[in-house]
Image (cartoon, rainbow, N blue to C red; front, side, top):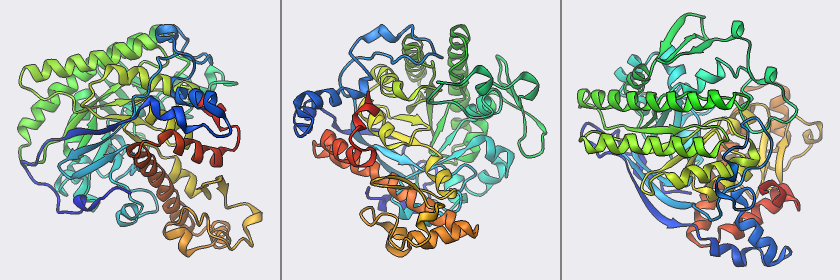
Length: 482
């Protein structure tokens, strides 16, 4: 696990250094030549080396692939993964890294000290929810997000852009990853049921707490996130669904670009105004669904906005987020398209990804950090990760299973509690069940990405991928990578 001692000091004060990113090692395609020389042979190893490309090299062949279609997209060959260090006013993040989600300034069921015990280096909170409760002014008065929640390490906040979609048109949160067998009605809500409506200037929405009316614009999002005080915050963007038309995707990418320009301007104004707080880093978000030309256009546009701001002596984007709905089989291709367009010296965050195979694919394609609610949400329902795949401890077969969740994974939960005990807690609806399962899952996921990072530094990424995936998914694991 990463050395987090540098993150345990007192909160950074005014004048603390700005965010920076240092690339340490780069993933080499040549590693794969000997990685799979075992049962699969060299041909199989070569196939796995390009798995992140999600198919044969074809460059722009995927440019016209329909956003709602299920065809695998083509991407250029070559690994873009790297290890590095993101340096923030509240400490360093060694990348690749998994970032637990603390939606309302808390990882549900855990204390910040428990989160830190998993090896987590940072947490990500939700600007929309903290705006509604307790209010960004309260967090600001409390010293900013890190001090308010007693985390005292790096923090992220998202912009509220996800809520534009999830409350507006994706009520069921069917964003990802698979549209097979789903109709438009499964994904997009009827207008009368929407709680958010997008226009050129921003979004009107109703509170999920009391139904009251509110409005977010790029400027409002920046004002909220500056008050929250996270080290890393994201520009306000519009997230579309996989069934939106090509025409709407084009309009949305253009609107997100215009919003990004407004975010940069407001970010500069607030930075100049709030000199009593540590510097915050604004990251642009790349949208474009599953269209190569739109993804590349969006990435280039954000880079141009950043360079223009910096040329004027203002602050540009400190990094970039890769957002939007996409199908699982195209994850690596889309991340690669975007990574090829972004500056090498800026970190890249992939929003909402946590399945083990997706992590390997995204890291190979060039993503540096990730966040997702899946490990914690799964844990509260009794689902746990093991090296041999996922289990649901609600199952009757665990009633007399006195073994740990996974002795090989280790950690506080596996070292102290049995599957039978946690099964009992789940059946009895005891809160401790969610705590133990969540704590284990974060230990597993944070530790997995730490091990991926170590394998990259040691020049054995593909070897480790084969070792882990072969055990977790079984002999057909290569099919998950395309």
